[in-house]
Image (cartoon, rainbow, N blue to C red; front, side, top):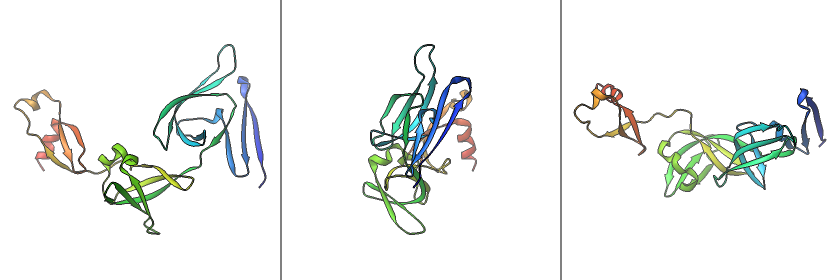
Length: 199
């Protein structure tokens, strides 16, 4: 497979942008970093959460980032020299349906091939509070393994329990905790509670 390079000077900043593809592996420049970029650092996939391009009065420009490791969940701050080459992590998403929980494992299924993918409770973490059977989620794959998953942007859950309000609560506004069908407890405004009671 051929290799190619794209080179361009970015205005008065004097920064050199280099985008290289070598044998199918995409190499990024640190100047390409933005929120959501997937990079490979020390043999692990990381997602950029924050970034800041810094050009000090003296010295070389650099990019300050906050990145999260997909595998361990650790978040660290890391600095890259401007224009330095980075390897893009080949992380891709596929939609799978959460079908059931088997002991301590959450089972997702590809509805076309019926192939199952299992995640442990530690992999799911706090997302279990919003996860319902039959929900379509995006599984994130890296090197053939599931490393994370994303819930849908919106979820439809049912309130299954709420403490009775105290006298005068509705006059002062505020909120009260309710329990959802997944076990999650959230605070909702008293005005919403009044609407729910009228159903």
